[in-house]
Length: 118
Image (cartoon, rainbow, N blue to C red; front, side, top):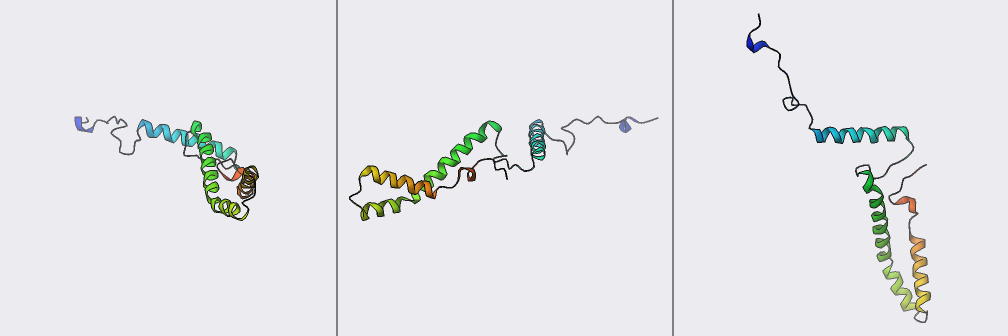
């Protein structure tokens, strides 16, 4: 006969040191589904995997804006020099040259926060 101390113990999740909480289980399940999606499409690089799906597009737009703003500020010295060298240029023509410099220096859209497909 078994003594009272030998009876099998029913373990709950909180009793098991290796158990995961519900929130961890949910995050792991979401990560597993994204991993399966990536394995189905191995040639695609999916940007911002650490963000929720609804936030990825917004973050791409924000990154593009920040990159464009940084580039615009980096061209400030060139704009000032052109205005010193060519003071007779009309303001409209100066703006057109500024925009042309910006367009030539800008990275292709696919380089900042977009899905890349080889």
